[in-house]
Length: 525
Ligand code: XMP
Image 1 (spheres, rainbow, N blue to C red):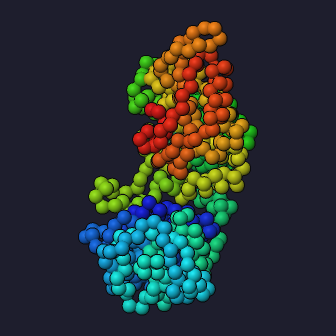
Image 2: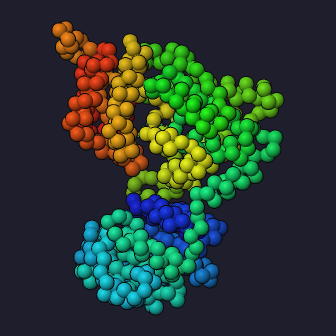
Image 3: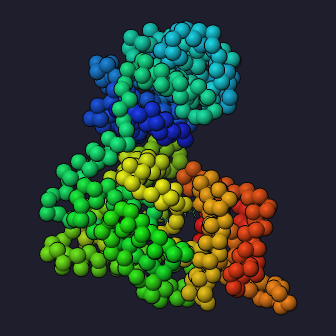
């Protein structure tokens, strides 16, 4: 295991991902974790991440007392990155001072001494790296040597091979450091001699074993399928482990996209053989949403109705099986549970960051279901890889995210007004199909149409119309937290707008949303 101690850099999780991409398992925990939490994980390598702090600030985060002694007596390799390097220097008896020449952005460094960090003798070789630091190393701890310097003459890489401590002042994990992966590879395989055995196939096999150990032979498990990748992959792996003692529910809340129910049910049943009960609750949801225009209220109603249906499902199941289901499967991912080390003064605590958007809102507390979260150590792209191994169809794995409250947050205002939902479904389908036909679907994080509760004047045929306006939204994003609007060619937009107005009755105007997030959100409500 390669353990990353997180000191709050925005790039920390990238280190975890880069190492996993080298087939080495890595985990990330808060940089201020106790010595016990670190040693319990028994890592062979520890990487101290970068962070926005200065080692001189009074409560700047650091590794626990006893960490250095533990690492040395157990032969653990330690690599400090940026702030992590400065922590090593300061805590091992060297000196870090406020830099006179701060280094931000691309910078050339030169290797001065043969070192395992840069492969076999690379003295004199230069590379461009990404720097981001204000403080600099003034005096090295005894026994350490400078391995590389920046073009400004500042320390860029250090090592003390006999104590197994290493440091990089720059960020090897970002793409702006083109040879960064090479350095991580040298460090892990040549210096630390770790073996590359972490494969998604093994993860899948191990996870199946774990689930089988947790769930007793008589116990039953339930799962709410949203139609998204995470819950589907989570259910599929649990199904592989315990077979039809898994019971899934898929709720048609009347807020799904064009033919969504048929399409996802086909994948669940035909491709994955999942035991799914499909509940048609469109009327129940739409009755409750009638006349409601406040976005928060809409979300609350949808969450509440979902819980009612889920509760009912669990009760019926209990009746049928003669015993209560014991576990609930959730598709929680690693970024949702990662502990992070926030900058001082940010007001955030070192607690788990839990996604505020949940498909399955809060579930009834008195159900007392224990959780199975088979994806909780995986990133999204790893979940897709796992899905491939489990034979989830490629087209399904690549679907754009879709919000739990569905089209309710894409019909502005009262969703039951007129035939807004039907119009939106048709417009959305034309837009998405055109994107697929143009080969653009996989380059876009999310694309959809929005129904606006206004009418505008148009002229269609020889007649003036007073019809609906729809908006098209497409964004690129890494994680949905920030997003940029997607630039379509004029010809593409022109074709889509014509197609929509010519084939969807009741629409005479199409606009495009050209705001990024922030200041907008991806969804409109
Ligand atoms: P926003 O609109 O907040 O959306 O920029 C960020 C991402 O989250 C999705 N989203 C949701 N997903 N339940 C979900 O499962 C929700 O209530 C919800 N609201 C927004 C949104 O589609 C985008 O991918």
